[in-house]
Image (cartoon, rainbow, N blue to C red):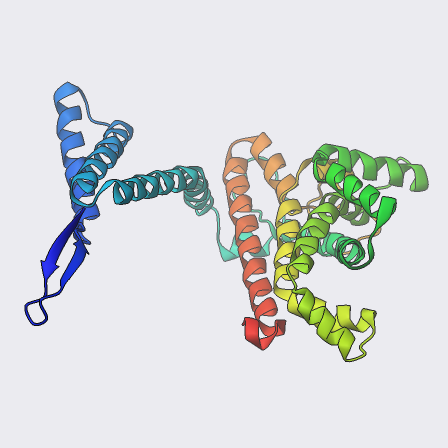
Length: 353
């Protein structure tokens, strides 16, 4: 709604829109909580879910009606849409926050420097000793090996699709990448198991076999993310390089990749986060051991997902070790993401930093 005001100095009339105070949404939220609690208290026993749901309804209705009376229909619609979007965001956060809270609370019972620095050699039954050091090393080795296989293939394929790809070959590659994106992890594990068994025999197990299985899952994620980042690079940058006589391959290396490096690193980290917690393919290909195996090409290796699965299936003290292993895995992913952010910030062009 608008009101007409007259400037005393000039005598000119201006239109001023009435608005709710900046603190109004907070006041409505507090009032809705109190009113919802009282209503639920009268009708029965208050619970967090019932009070919260009723408070949200009261808040949305009260703020929208008040805004419609005071500010007009357009502003009321805007406030209602803002409320619904904020509510959807909050609902989406509930499982994430609940998951993180549960892992932190349960995992902190066994999480300690000793747990991180010891392995499971000589630990049997419900013995309180034993740690996750061998699984951490195995996870890092296999993940790095999978990245070494996947990242060059993914980046080069993305460069081909964006810079060179035309015709049936490019469309076929795009189709196959889409198909690979939906492959279940157990299928990737079976593929690697079958391939290495056919080449080296049925008794062969190694970290390389697990890395090959994870690379099948990583490659389509790397291709898709890098492809989108390369497409975001303005064509004007390429044309400026061509105008200066720079060959196309140097333009891609010096201009396109340098401009998209932050997004490419983020895409690689998304792929790493996609596979670092996979259990089924590693359970088939590398199994589990009680000590550290530093040889990627021979012997079984322990990994955090398989370690957590095996410990949880044992019950007792193993359940606490499983939660602590899950907390360790989340911490590793967070550290890797922080490192990736720093790397992308350092190597990205100055105008993008």
